[in-house]
Image (cartoon, rainbow, N blue to C red; front, side, top):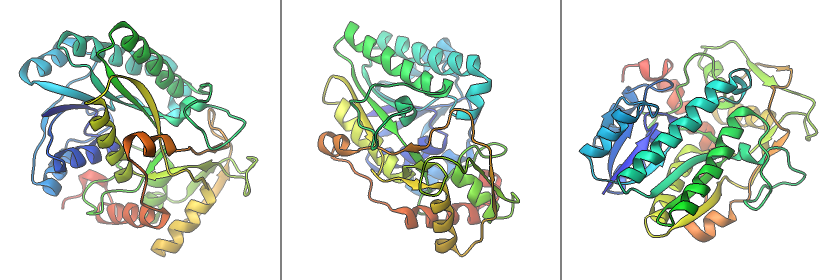
Length: 339
């Protein structure tokens, strides 16, 4: 069975490709390589012994995307492709709206034309925005606080409308929290372009000597130590969540949202101290101003995913730190490092 993975060369996409291949699926990847490096797929092959079919295609190019569907009998789609930096989205909202929403519209049009109605969508916990209570559950009123989050929210609403127009669709909306860590092998991991936007690659790049010190955005949040609290989920747990969601949409119709998280929140300072304890590497840091669009506390209730998908996160903070450091120490320059 062939599964199309959009954005499959990226951090979460490449780890999901590993799980799909190990589960016996044939994988077709489309990616424009804007925020990823094709070397990741070579390493996926090193891990699994199996290759993926890769197309350097942008979802905004409907003709090129249609050719992929013409050449392969696609059974389902896992949709990762999109711009993803919260801070950047605040300064470049039109770029985010155009890329993320238009790309998804074109993907859905092509899927409809080829009779493919099963999709797992990479959504985000940012769709919850500011809430009065934690953990966040899927029944909350959605209210994203930044353009990136709003693109995810709008796409969720679009996909609901798509299903309402044609009840053959089966769609899982995966609202995941903060993906971290790397594959146990240390062969694939997170390799952002330029200065990292996310906490963990920043920590590991400081630890390996690429960056001088970590900037902690905000030290005056209403949390126990003043820094933001997040639900950090190991990327392999997250990838397995996509596999479970795929199995679900292949056998059901309708639109269902699922939190993929651990159900626990850790502050930025707690994550720094945990990394230091686990790896023995000291991480110098400075508290700076809050980042526009960020909220104080975000962690999710993953019980629906456990009940309906048979999925739950099993990897803890120590394992996250160990695997992230193994990846970075083996690959100080990311995918430019020769194995």
